[in-house]
Amino acid sequence: MSVNIFFSYAHKDEGLRDELAKHLKTLERQGIIETWYDRNIDAGVERATEIDDQLDSADIILLLVRSDFVASDYCYNVQVKRALERHDKGEAKVIPVIVRPIDLEGTPFSKLQSLPQNAKPITEWENQDKAFFNIVQGIRYNIEDLANFQQQKQ
Image (cartoon, rainbow, N blue to C red):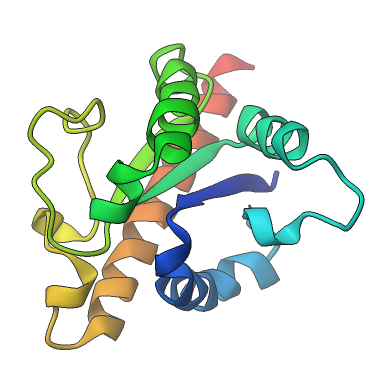
């Protein structure tokens, strides 16, 4: 079983999204995960429909959180809303990944445990590779949790 991971992020963080994707590549090569983000949309495809389809089929939705993400009406009002609806129904797991320092108080995803550890923003880590390693470990744990849940349902 391959787990579909959807990246929801502000385009200003594309570099950090790319770096996280590199750290997840081992899981992808093992066939454990498939990742998707909006830059995978082919020419001629309707963007909103494709994003909605991918968001609705994701098993894990990563919210790469910073001020630009929260300030984006599309990320905040469309993607986060749909992601949390699916999370609350048990259809997907939403994981906030704190990219840069931000006050999460009052956000709809503040109730969720964030990565990296202690919600310390990636950019605040002295060694960012350790932050990404911590995030990958957290995602791996969630993948194992999903697999156990799927086995129990059968």
